Amino acid sequence: MSIGEVAERTGLSVKLVRHWSDIGVVPASGRSAGRYRRFDEAAVGRLELARALRELGLGMSAIRALLDGERSVAEVAALHADAVATQIRALRVQCAVLRAVARRGATAEELAAVSNVARLSAEQRHAIVQEFLVGAVGEIDASGYRDGLLAVMPELPDEPGDEQIDAWIELAELVQDPRLQEAVRGMAEYAAAHAPETYDERDVEVAEALTDLWVSKVAAAIDSGTPADSPAAEAVVAEVVEAWLPLQPDVDVHDHPRHKLLEQLEMAADPRAERYWQLLCVINGRPVRASIAREGQWLMTALRANPTPGARAERIAEALAKEAEESAAAALAHYERVVADVDAIVAAVTRAQFADPTPCAGWTVRELLNHLVYENLMWTSLAEGSPRSDFAADHLGDDHVAAFREAATRALIAFRRPGMLTQEYGPARGWRIVEQVTIELLVHGWDLAAATGQDTDLAPDVATALLGPVQEMHRDLPRTPGGSFGPVQPVPAGATAADRLAAFLGRALPQGS
Image (cartoon, rainbow, N blue to C red):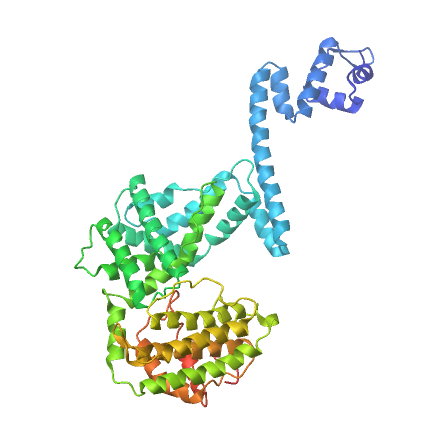
């Protein structure tokens, strides 16, 4: 048959048959008198098989090897299937990364960076993380923590989900952060000095159980409104230390265990390290432990406030034992004055402002109003001998002004009860309860005024009288995340007494104060 006849029989172009003949896929069986190529039936069969293999994506060298008998069909098919599977996996990852770029609305620069990530093979992804880990812990003495770090690599599945791709992109960026490397190195050094030398899954399970225990106890304290730097936090600290101590072979009850626990928590508190493990879990399809940053900050602050059992309660008792500058009657008068000023601020708040932020981190105006009402209700319940704990409830209802006034009226009735101001409540007399709620209303009233654009110069005479007692009571508090107050803020010359009080309790003063 001529080359044209073969092309017609197979449906291939003359040009392609000639090319395949030139490269040895289908050799001519002979030549005509005019030196034109001639082909037999076997050539037609080879061409049809070559076309089928080419449509499956096989390269010409593999096709020649099969047609020449160097490999069987099964061998060639298996090899090519593996190659196609690898390409499919790579394309799936690239497709998922491109979708991630679309979701993120990435810039041109970010697209270039993400594109590089998309082209990485599994081995290259391992190498990125391995390089980070070796740089962080490579020369540190062996420990279970170090071995556990080196053992866990990101393993993207063949068909990664959007969350897994997002996690890998974030992880690839995170391991370039020198602060993460520094944090991981510090943890590894601490583990080399204090933790088991070999990685044991049972040790991990025990550590996780202990973490679950203290996180649940601290979360319950936070949800009930217990401040980390208050005497009420002591019970939680004591329970956590009691559970933690038996698991520390190099610490005993006489070796400042609270200091040791605080040191351990501070070492593990870096949010980048927590995020590193969360991302690995997402990528590898494992359950992700929720962030415990909130609970960790609370516990660290509670340990700082109570470095020894009962330390915070002793400090408060010491402050309360000092001779007061004001009488019981003056305490009640101060409360009445502050309530009147705060009432005016509350009444000026509109519902349109409810969602606005306030100087109290994480609280909206509505949440702050709810807290003002709760403060009156809670201190009233203490005065009445039946403390309430519905800290998280909605005490505001549909009328925030009426709710505040009703709570304040109940407080005044309780505080005016004969003998209440001189009655003993634990280490303090009743007028100290009145003083405390006055301080709370004064400070949070200032917060509300600042948040809603009102005058913050509340009850100047009261603020002046209470500034000293507040400083005495709270001067030793740890000003750390999880505590009641932030760091003391600067006060400009001529600031009002309420502004000075707010600044001492961590509020940044508005411009022009």
